[in-house]
Amino acid sequence: MLKLFYAPGTCSLASHIALEEAGADYEARRVDFSTAEQTKPDYLAVNPKGRVPALLTGRGVVTETPAILTYIAETHPAANLAPRGDAFAFAQLQSFMNYLCSTVHVAHAHGRRGARWADDPAAHEAMKAKVASNMTACFELIENRMFEGPFVMGEAYSIADPYLFTIAGWLEADGVDPALFPKVLDHRNRMTARPAVARVLAAVKL
Figure 1 (tube, rainbow, N blue to C red):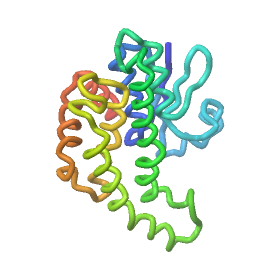
Figure 2: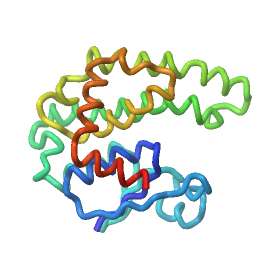
Figure 3: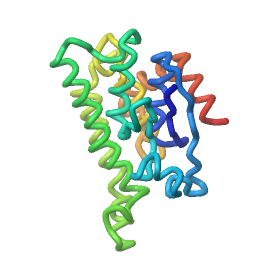
Figure 4: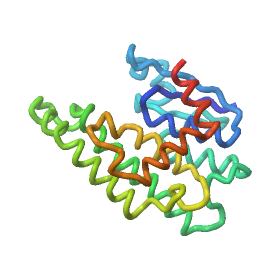
């Protein structure tokens, strides 16, 4: 059985949804950020990075959302969560997910994790002030150039969809009106209606 280590409000939601969509045999283990459990020895033994998600498999631990999502797709081929056998389409999928990971998530994190990049409190405030404009620029690119529709990669649902859904869910808190991005907002609304997504959202609120 797989074990997913997650925390509400984080990018681990994408992996959680993908496991549910894949019909995987898994256990979800909540990491309590309110007590800084992610910094304690027991969790650091699982993921020395002290972050979520982490996926415990029969061969060891996989970390980083794009890697976990790819692992889920590869180990559950019947779920058709990635374009298997099409190298270009698979590379495009990876390109989208890595943009979310390396650029969009980082733009969001500057509003909450400024201490990762600077010690000066004034620098933290300057980073926060840029979050809305940076996230807007990221989602303008997604909306106008990267999103195929009706799903991220076109007609076929893939592991990129729960990832986009997760990060698009942060827009309001980042001071961005999601109505600026009608295709992304429509995607978010349709994702919420998916049974697997509804099950996971209910579970993480417990």
